[in-house]
Image (cartoon, rainbow, N blue to C red; front, side, top):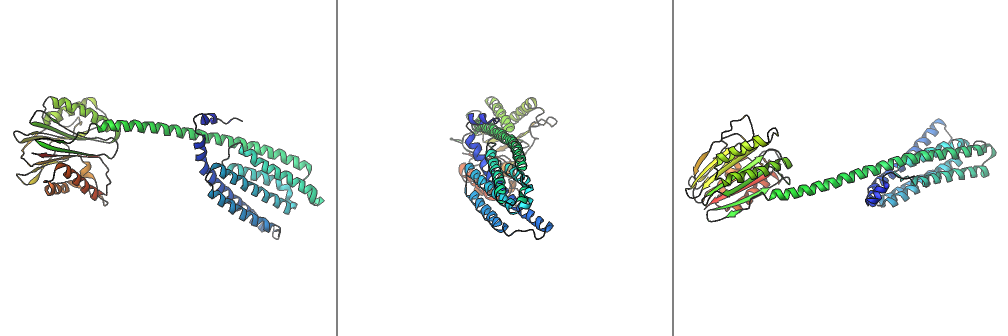
Length: 455
C-alpha cells in the first residue's frame, strides 16, 4: 500500500533526515517496550500466584532468567546503537525474544493453552504500537508471531498428552491464524496512518524551518541595511565624534545622526523609538529621511523635532509608536550650543569652564503623542575648547545589575567627570566596559552612544 507523502519526502531529499529524526524516538520506544514487557510478565505472574497458589512450575525459572538477561542485554545494545536501522534490528531481536518466551510459557502451562491466541494477539498489538515501525516492518513482526503460533501448534500436536490437544485443536489453529491475520491488518492500517502523520508533521516542520531560514536571511539583509544608517565617527579640525552602537537585536529603534549645516555649524540628533524589532526599525528609517530633509534646510533643534513630531502624527497615527529625541546645534565659530530635549533621558555637556557635567534635561514631552503640547523649547549654553558632549539612549541608564538596581544618571555623571580628559573613542569603550561590569554584559535594550570632543 502506498504511503501518503512518501514520494514528496523522496523528491525533496528528506528521507535520510526524516530517518535520522525518527531514530531517537524508535530507540526510546524500544526501552519502553522492553520495560513494559518485563513489567506485564512480572505482574501477571504475581496475580497468577495470588489467585492460584502453588501453580508455579519450576520449568519457568530458566524462562525468567532468559527474559531478564536477554532483555537487559538487548536494551544495552539499543543504548549503544545510533542509527535507525540498528535500533530496528534491536527491536526485532527483542520481539523474537518475547515471542519465544510466550511460546515456552504456553508449552510449560499447557493446561491453559486455550488462551494462547489471546496472548499472541496482545503481544502483536504491544509490539506494533509501542515501537513506531514503518508500516512494512509490521509484516516482519507478524511473521514472528505467526511462526511461533504455527510452531506451538506443531509442538502440541506431536509432544503433548492427548488431553492437552483438545484445548488446541486444528479448528482452534485455523481460527487463530484468521484472528492473527485480522490483528495484523488492524496493526498495519493504524501504523500506516501514524507513519503518514509523522511524515506530514516532518514536512510541515521542514516547511516552517525553510520559511524561518528565508525570513532570517531577509532580516539579516534588513539588519545590514539598517546598520548603514549608523553614522561613522568623525575627526576634523573642529571636533572629534565617536559613535558606538551596541544592539540587543539585529534591528532596533535607537538612532543617531549628525550633519554639518554649514562650515561652522554641526547638527546632532539622537532618538529612541518605543519597542524593538522591525516596526521600530521601519520608523527609524523614515526618521532618517526626515532628518536629512531638515538638515539640508539649516534647521535648528526645535524646528527639527517639531517637524519630526508632525511627520509621526500624520504618517503613523494610530500605531502607538512614539519616540524620545534630543537634538543640538553646535556653532563652533560663536562657541555656542542650542539644544532641545523631547522626553529623552538627560544628556550631558562636560564644561571645562565649570569643571563639571551639565545636565541637559527634557523640556518637552516625547514625540508622537497627539494630545500633548506640541511646542518644543530650546536651551542655550556656551561651549569651550576641551568640552565633551555625551549623547546616549536609555539602554545605558536602564540596564540593571544582578539585584535589579539600574545604572542610572549618577554613575554616568561620575564617569564623565572622572574621564572627561580621554579621547571620545577611548571614552566610549571605557564607559561601555564599565556598564558591562555593572550588568554582567546582559543588556535588555539597545545602547547608542555618541561622544563629541570640541577642539
